[in-house]
Image 1: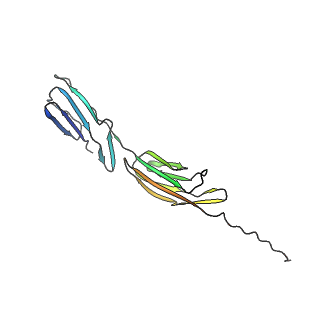
Image 2: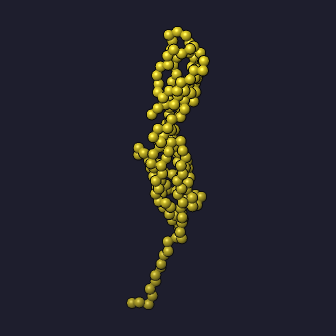
Image 3: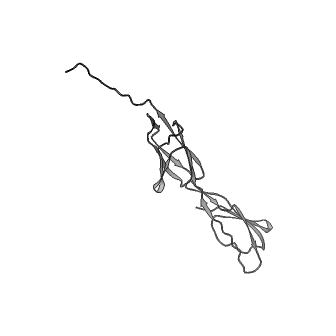
Length: 171
């Protein structure tokens, strides 16, 4: 993956770079090193500093500029609806590298490695009512620098029916 760096300086100097290296025969003065975000295989890499000033002096002394890129993580909002206020959801988010996290209410998961995740939910009971999730499982693709959403809606039905049978008069 190529970097996106531009160096500008005295005398209308401007040079675009895609990798590190030496810039020789520079005129003494202040140079600006600007780094742009880079996209590589659906992952955004953000420079830790968008720009920096480097002073180049006459002589054999080399000025050094370091550009560091970091992966821009993804975010996943898990929205849970349909449960009474004091009832916790039973949702698990699984993803790359064995990632697994229990979610008990609506939440936004930050700093996720881009990749494929699964949001799985199971039934919960509150009082005499069992709430079923919909969907029970869903795939989600988390992308770099993007907020994606997965919704789990719980629906409760009446309490299970019961039949008390009394047989009288039989011997």
